[in-house]
Image 1 (cartoon, rainbow, N blue to C red):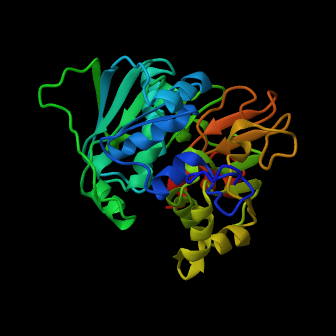
Image 2 (image 1 turned 180 degrees about the vertical axis):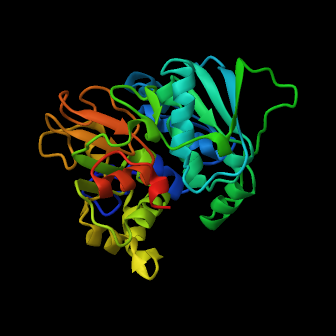
Length: 343
């Protein structure tokens, strides 16, 4: 307010929007063909819009603000192609956890991760953002998905009509390529204490949990809550379950969107969930009073992006990363559960 900054969204003000990576998309700042730098590693989320976006440190950010320029080495690209139509029990989170299990947390260091294939272009924009969001968990400099009609329609609805589209050349040379058939993939988790510690939910089913968490820039979008609400409709959770919308717009959508005539918010309340205000909350641990924060001995299943020791709070807790479907199913049973049980 003191400097009358036009794009200032400070916490505690009417302009506050929530987690920046989701608000950028909602507010029309993700424009295909442009370049975005942000002072958070998950800035790569915006690559779902066919743009180059990556995280930088505060010193680099200051240089960019002062000069409008920055030195960057052009990264090699790794291509991930997902063929087939997505089964109802899979989400983008399952796909990115599959990738991380294959390439590990440093397999894409300083490389671009390009996502392609029928399954990718069958996704809405918010699901695509889950993939590009977690490019950094593979060490990636950025994640990117080419523009298609889904992208164009999303942007048109929020008033963004002027942009430049880029696609990979037909003869593009890649550092490496990975190809998957989504019809053969299963609901997936990352076991403690690394996002690349991949396993199928089927292999870890029955593991007792103490908390469930749906939120973050990775798993706090309206689509994530739609998945969770679908499973929680008419159910009661057996463990403390947190619902943390990533943005104020998502928080509003929880009240507006319905399943069988019941709002998502009401579904969560009826199931016994705790609904928090829009924020990062326990995704990055925080002070002891942070909502959703893990305590000593907790076993958490979460839609967040990292499960390193202490990431969500106590170093004496364990965190399993999973899709919103798996998190919701597990919340109902009190143990890690394959969502297909409820679908």
